[in-house]
Amino acid sequence: MRDHSELTSLLTDWLPRQRWFAGKGRPGAAIRIRQDVAVSDLLRHLVVEVDYADGGPADFYQVPVVIRLEAPYGHEGFLIGRSSSGLVYDGLHDPHGAAAVLDFLAGGRRHGTLAARALAPLSAMPAHSVGAEQSNTSIVYGEHYILKVFRRLWPGVNPDLEVTRALAEAGSAHVARPLAWLDGELADPGQPEPEGVTTFAFLQEFLRSGTEGWKLALTSVRDLYAEGDLRADEVGGDFAGEAERLGVATAEVHTLLARCFPTAAVDAESLKATASHLHARLDAALTGVPELAPFEPAARGAFDALAATESAPPLQRIHGDLHLGQVLRTDTGWVLFDFEGEPARPVPERRRLDSPLRDVAGMLRSFDYAAQSMLLERQNEGERGLGYHAREWAERNREAFLAGYRAGSRLDLDAQAVTLRAFELDKAVYEVLYEARHRPSWIEIPLGAVRRLTQSHPPLPTGSAAA
Ligand SMILES: Nc1ncnc2c1ncn2[C@@H]1O[C@H](COP(=O)(O)OP(=O)(O)O)[C@@H](O)[C@H]1O
Ligand SMILES: O=P(O)(O)O[C@H]1O[C@H](CO)[C@@H](O[C@H]2O[C@H](CO)[C@@H](O)[C@H](O)[C@H]2O)[C@H](O)[C@H]1O
Image 1 (cartoon, rainbow, N blue to C red):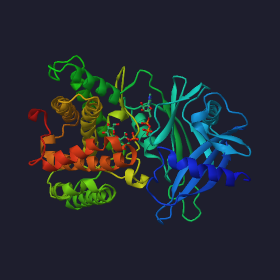
Image 2: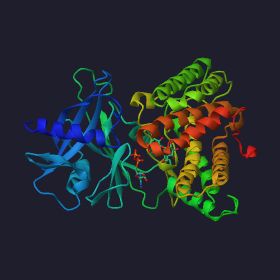
Image 3: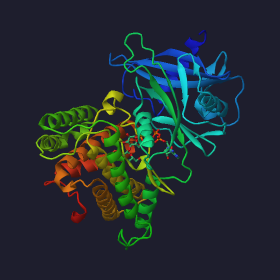
Image 4: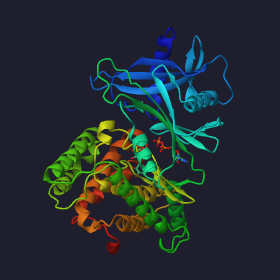
């Protein structure tokens, strides 16, 4: 198309500044528009390829755009740039652009390489985007639907769609109902399409009674910090009951996933493979964050201990990036969402069978994050001496979550201490790298955890009895 050279130059400046741009730190990003589909009179759906000077694999992103001759009120933050055809906006943040996506989904039609698949009748609703953009962009329609648009595209079915659909069809009360999705081809002439279709976006029921676990946890931490003399179990905002129910919900989701998808018994070979994967992730993190170096020998020891462990639950499909920001407390209980796995890992890796204890470890790390992030905030305000309360809150909720998980799964978690510690450490190492790239002022949270976890010998207690 005639305006591609202009759009390419605008995107070259705009794309690397987006939170979800994964190529930060990679040299010489060169952008090419690979697909341009007119979804409506206003909305154009672009698929953009980014190649790097390091010769490593290219990344693909989707950038729906709207071009307007005049600037509508309140659109400043979503301007990609000015072209000779008009002002180019991020189409997902433009109300008419977002409405065009819903209309397309409701129609269940195909436009060029893009196809809409609807599982239920959909009605037009006003659109607004949600919160801070992280790995993706989410749009809420009225109070009924939420659409997640996967910004970085990986060939194949997105695990969020795949897993949520399977759980919903199996009758799980712990997921939001899937309503529609958008898929297409990720044209890459150099390579055969591995999975046929690529998921671009996923529409689910919007749970209006839902409050994010992260927000609830922070409220509880705030309560405890405000009541300097009280213990965590004495303050009104105690979270332990919720943490325990969350543990039960997580176990129920795991049980259902083990029924819906294949599982595999763990043997010496697979344990060795898991440990070498953890070593490789540590290698990558050490390259990116040299501050991890002092902890390397002890971390390697913890991963080797995992390779030698004698008991581990079977491998199965899991959530893959479970934390308090991925769960909603609704009127009817806890709901898990974003079954995408860690956004930085290639999708084929995220769809592999894995240990359910990875999810457990992810949530344990999140209790530490909730307590410590609030501490960071308070210490910036000059309030010191809350460290004891932070550890107390994290420990209490971690134990409650484990008690719930134990009750729901009937897994002997005490026998899993070595595995759980290795996964917690691996998650903390991942988080160090994640924070270094996206939120450097928080890096001390996971670094502190790496420090603690590499010092703890014997392994940290994992049962409610050890609280
Ligand atoms: N079904 C839902 N109902 C209500 N809110 C939701 C639902 N699914 C996700 N959310 C909210 O939307 C936000 C973004 O969703 P998420 O899948 O985590 O995107 P990202 O991958 O960018 O983190 C979350 O913070 C969550 O609070
Ligand atoms: O929600 P995403 O799929 O985008 O996950 C990524 O971002 C998360 C939040 O920034 C990050 O989670 C880390 O911070 C959370 C608090 O904001 C904390 O509860 C988690 O324990 C911690 O890992 C996640 O790791 C990353 O993949």
